[in-house]
Image (tube, rainbow, N blue to C red; front, side, top):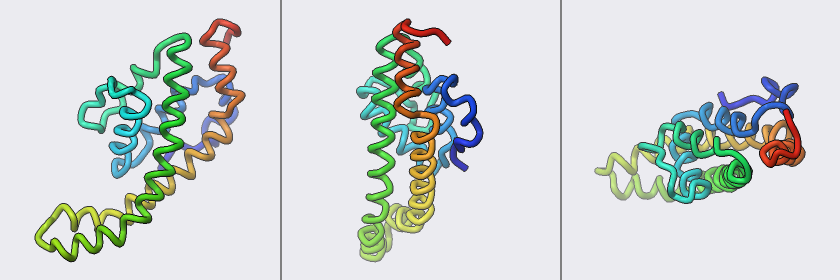
Amino acid sequence: MCWSPEVTHGAAIAADPRDMLMSFIESLPRTIRGEMLMFLQLYAGGGRVSLDDGRSPSHLREHLMAGGTAAVGRLLAALAAIDFSLETMVARAREAEPVLRRLAEDCSGSAAFRESYLSLPLRRRHGEQALSDWRRLRETALTTSALRAFEEEQLGLRHK
């Protein structure tokens, strides 16, 4: 199950938004976690963040844990990348079914096309649930006011 805002809602403002983001990523099912990590590397890591084989979020955590303006910029880039990537992932999964079905039929000897087609419903459900959970997280804990508080803290304008 993906991250639930009910778990930390009471402490949302005091919690480090980078930790909340990482908890969300680490809670994603394996069926979509690697894809999300690749999107984060591509869009929020500037291609400089090594994510091993796309399954380990440890390098992303290190990347996000910078201080000062770098911390704010990297967090905002990661949030935007997740906003964009989850929406895109869900939309493309819906569009991919007829294409993958046709490829699986036309290339019946290809295990890869068949596996992609057969796993699509599960990946689509996982993506839709992750998008729902992400939207709830953005509405409850990773709000604009929480991000402003994080920015002020990182810039030394306010203390925890």
